[in-house]
Length: 237
Image 1: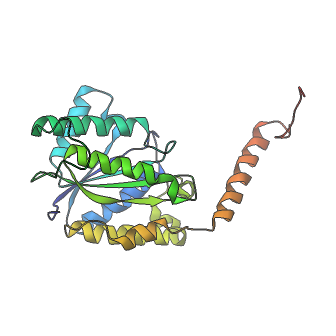
Image 2: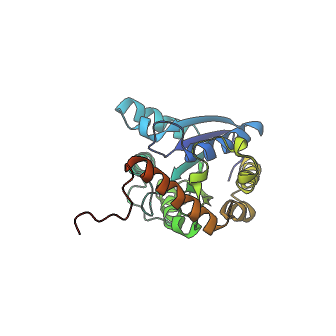
Image 3: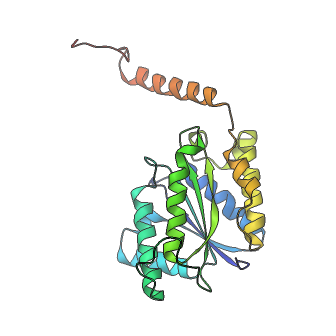
């Protein structure tokens, strides 16, 4: 990796408002800025709404030394808009460099190509659920000729609920430390350290506690919206 001067944050969440993916990405973007990088944030959903916006996305990628994609897990993969954005970027990069059709892992990063980092968060407490999605991102980097700098996985991402990480305090201590380490290494032109991957994967609360709170939340919502009808009611049995 070369020492980056510019970084682009791609927010892969389809949510129109604040999202947990944006919260994670924004924290890293802010940390990169404190280390001297010039940054830009693009929401991929908005970038795909028109040809003009898509051209601006591709131009932003071309102008960046580092590209970070932060996204939620959707059925073991990326959300459809994030997948489409990566397809567009890969096709553009392959077309410009004559590498179209190259198999993942066989296309070395060209001189001047950006480094690529993925951050995946999901509602599952187990980080293993997101490993396929990170592998998809690694394959994208290879197909686009980007330098793969690594991926971070956060389980139980629903706890963030779109709030800034700093406002969540101790609950996100390990995640923030992971992103601090990530910013240190990326700003110095180095890939993600293993310690950052480990810290991001560290559960903020025990898995059984997260499942209990999740079930309690679902039952509370059902109770409010079901007009007192039990969740296990079988009126036509």
